[in-house]
Image (tube, rainbow, N blue to C red; front, side, top):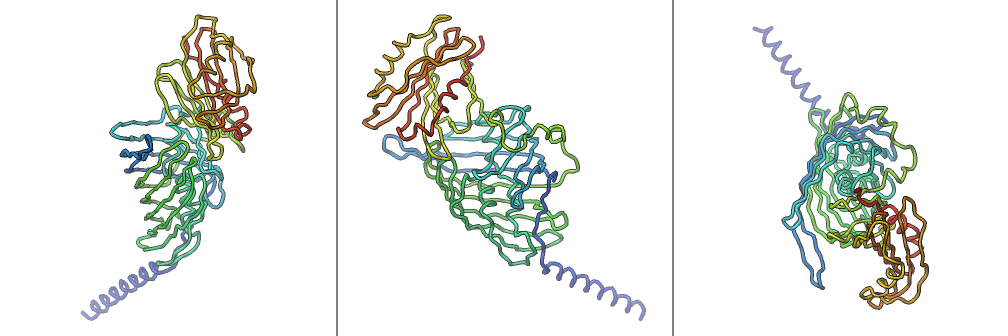
Length: 444
């Protein structure tokens, strides 16, 4: 019996010792550093739930409509370059990318085509650039892969050093810009805190405010997030990111107030999927991305025309016969283009230049004072293009307008009017001409 009692005491002492060791381990500093290197392999699952309101000013009266959105993204990610301790270029293979948006009870579903599931995400000073090396994206597809939470920021949300429970740290502006999907950060006051360590998992929080700009809209955000860090794997394994946005009206978007919750689950993967193989990655350009890869495609719903345009142009309105685009230069509004489908002429014919110029001078609200350029421009494949640029006034305000008429050999006709302030003419340069030349008439 004495031996049994002694053995029992020894076991109890041993267990007590283990408990003390565990307690000490929990209280010991934890190195919250995510090691990021090229060819790092992870898989992320993102769930978004967003609710809020959009605000418009109609005839001097402020109106609002409800906004709801839900999205799900599942993708493998391969790191191609690292900057500031965070991935700066990654290649993603989307297994799932869907979103459902409801604006004033009108629902729109978005998805990613099978041939555009390999996306490159590149952080730069102006935010996040996403593109597909396999072909141009549409604006909806671009928004689908650009506007979800960006896992590239995760390493930057951590202190990058050993901390104890209760310790806090300041999140860098670069990480805040990436996490909040901003074009620029004016002021960031995000603070991280280690709140617990248990069973090899460190729990941390991110709280605070961020002010910045996106597509010319000023944004104020409040963030409240909780994350988990796998101490053994040295990786952020989960995150619940809650964000409240208050956005002012911008040149291409209305004012809004929204609340969004993002749930992230993240794990390592043993092998790259085919879309992230060495052969697939070989298609990713080094250095500057060619304009052909960043161009956006737009297709008329009736098949009358298609258009490849630079991302500086944003569609802000569309009807059966018209489409309105606004040109932004680093978030600043510089010009507006109105594209119009004209009545078709007989094959091989088009409206006479004199009649086109007469129609311009008779445009409602337009008072033309001086013609700056006037004449045909060289085109290929039998297409005809006429351009007239003039100074004048719209609603008593000085403005420069360029009027284009594009015609196909089959008699299709397309009019484009580009309006800008006189001081913005140089900023526009030839971007309006590039837009017009990129119009392709539908196949017959």
